[in-house]
Image (cartoon, rainbow, N blue to C red; front, side, top):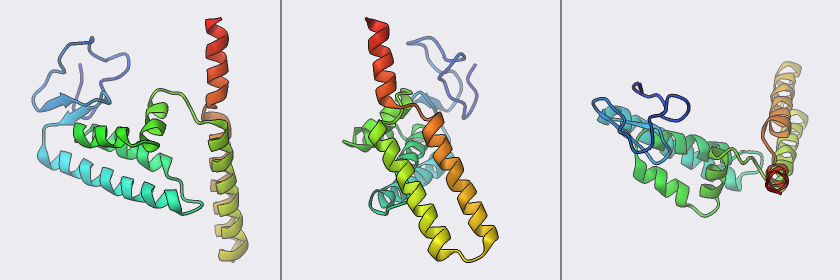
Length: 170
C-alpha cells in the first residue's frame, strides 16, 4: 500500500500498469506520489523553483555545487508537478545528470575530480582568508572533509560502472 508522500518505487511499488490507490494521488514520471492538496503541491513547487535557482547560481559560482540542487528540485517536482519535473529532466546537461543519478549511474571521473577540487579550493579560501576564529575553521574543514569523502567513496564513478557492465556482458 502506498501512503501519502511515500515513494511508489522499491519493494512496495505497485505492479506495472496498476493504479496508485487513494484519494488525491497521482504518480509522476519519477515514480513519486503527487499530492492532491493544492497547498502541498504549491509548497513543493516553490521549494523546487528555489532549488533550481540555487542550482543555477551554482553553475556560475565556483565552490557552490549545482547538481545536488537540481536533483533535489527534481524530487520536489516529482511530488508536485509532472510538467516541471519533465522540464527539468529535458534540460540538456542538467537533465542527463539528474537522470544518471536516479538510475544509480554515478558521476563521471572528470566531474568527481572537479567536485573534489572545488570543495578543497572553497574550504581553503574560506579557512585561509575569510574565517579568523579556530572553531569555525575546524567546522568548515570537517564539513569539507565529509564532502570530499562522500564524493570520493560513496558516489559511484561512472567509468567504473560502465567497465563492470561491459565485463559482465562479455
